[in-house]
Amino acid sequence: MNASLFSSPTAAVLLFTGLVLTEAGDWHDVVVATEGAPVLLACSQRPPKDTMEVHWQWKPHGGDTVSLVLSANERQEFLGEALKTDVRLADSVSWKSGNFSLFFRPRSVDGGHYMCLIKQGQKKLKEEVTVLVILTVSLGPRLPVSEQSTLRLQAEASSRDAVSEMSWLSPHGLPLRCETLPSGAVIAKLPLVTVADRGNYTCRIRPRGNCSRPAFFFLYPVTVDVSRVVQFNLSFNTQLSKACLAHTPVVLSCAPVRGDYVLLYWQHPDSRQKIEKIFTYDRWRQRFRNLTKSRLHLKSSASLGDFSFELTPQPEEGGVYICEVFLNDSVFSQGTRISVLHVSVSSRPSALTLTCRYSERSQVKTVTWTHENRSRRLDWSSLEPGSLKIKVETPPGPETAGNYTCTLELNNGKKLEAVHVISLPRDELPSSSFPSPSSLPFLGFLLPVITVAAGVLLWKLRAHNARRGIEQSLSYHTGEVENIYENPEDLRQTQSSVYMDLKPTSDNDVYKELDRYEHCPC
Image (tube, rainbow, N blue to C red; front, side, top):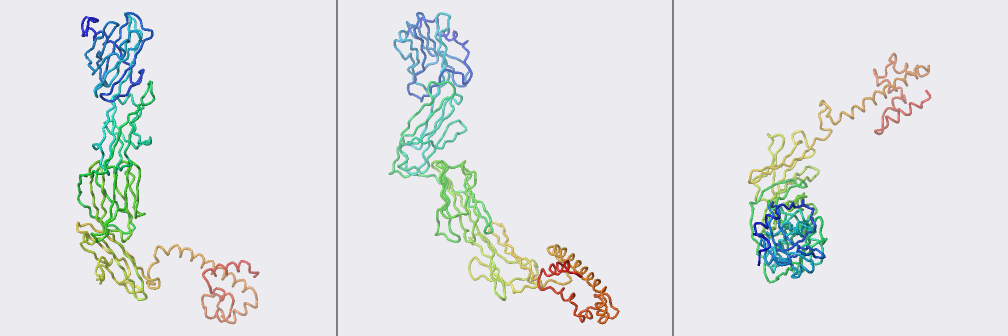
């Protein structure tokens, strides 16, 4: 091609290095294209004028230098140093039509700002900036996808500034759950793919700022091969060993990787044969199934792929919990062996039976019963595996009352205790002992009531002493005694209703007598 339009290619480049590029977001158009696919960057001048020149320049994303792509007039075209595949003006008769759009097949590195400058002599007729965004898409695993594998749809744009949203749509046009990777790429996943998941998946790009189109759509067909069996890479972490009390939360750990979905299995306590799947969770589809245990919950970080569970076990729910985390084509397994400790009490007329039950016996080193009085020796029995019993005679005495502790020790040295308290009956408490703190509020209430009752009684007697007949009656039975507390026996012989009324027949009779005295017309 003749380059006589310019004295040299270098001069052509220097001619336009003074062009100032606009800031991010201040452009005339955005075009999104994939690598190798034909792209057209629009630029036109109508009606065309004689002696016009068209210059296309390029500034790559994040770059500072501007290089010439193509220059042309009505006689010839000149290719600059920014070489592109198949680059040319799109219209072969552009000098008649006024269409000076640029055509080429971009590579992954060809994204950036493209400037179309149309001049007539020293006069600028048009200056437009188009941002070209190169979309790179990767699908995995290799098509056709094996059934039960994890389909990965990943898209990355060469410029974040020119894109407001990237998303994936299902073959039915529904948005898929997407996440943004640190690199800026957007990924969607479909674990456990089936034949129903085949079809055309769409990557949707919404540009930012000025754009002639509201969105760009790119279709990617996905096929599923049911005859191929997925092969997972398995890895096993060291099994954890724990013990917990029944009805107390315990954490079931999973592998420390961010996964796509998780399965939880339960191997029944002290059994290698009975194992069942109890929980599944797919964080991409936001689906979960709790199959058997209402007291089992995923922790809140599961939506981000950090899986762990919290279980509040019943006494019979010890055993081995196996958590399998799936990430792409890999599986990470983490087992937790749990012994559940529980103390129960059964009562008979002559004795209490304290039973300490524990599960997953293979990891238990010792189980013992102790009394708070360490010098006291306890006799226990074990009529069945995983159960340790002691008997306490009833009613308990000072020697047998107190704290009974069942201590479980695992093979790894961890210990767990369950405590049961047996209290003395009230009538067995020593009379000289100081009242317990729990009885002080009752005593504080009772003393004022007794004081008031005694005061009312004395006031009643004084009122009766004022009457002559009553005075003679008291004097006859008690002689010179005026205080009723000096000789209670003499007072009983008077058959006074005052003394008899103070014998309560129920807990609240004191209040009834006080109320009656207030209305007495003595």
